[in-house]
Length: 88
Image (cartoon, rainbow, N blue to C red; front, side, top):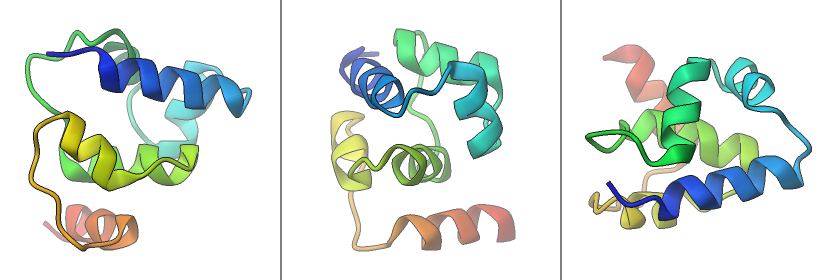
C-alpha cells in the first residue's frame, strides 16, 4: 500500500506535537496500528471510521485521506462515520 497517507498523517501528528502513543490514546486506535499506517505497512486500507478519527484529531480532510487510499468518498462527515462504526 502507498505510504503517501502515512507520510501525511505523520506530518500532521508532528505539527500537533503528538507522539504515536498520544495519537493512539486520543483516537482510541491501537498504537501498533497507528505505527503501521504511518509506515505504509498495512495490506489493506483502514476502515472509514479509523480515517475519520485520524482526520478529526489531526485536522485533516477525510475525503482526501479516503481518496489517497482509493476509497470512495461520500458527503458524510467524520462524526457520522464514527457513529456508524460504533453502531455497526
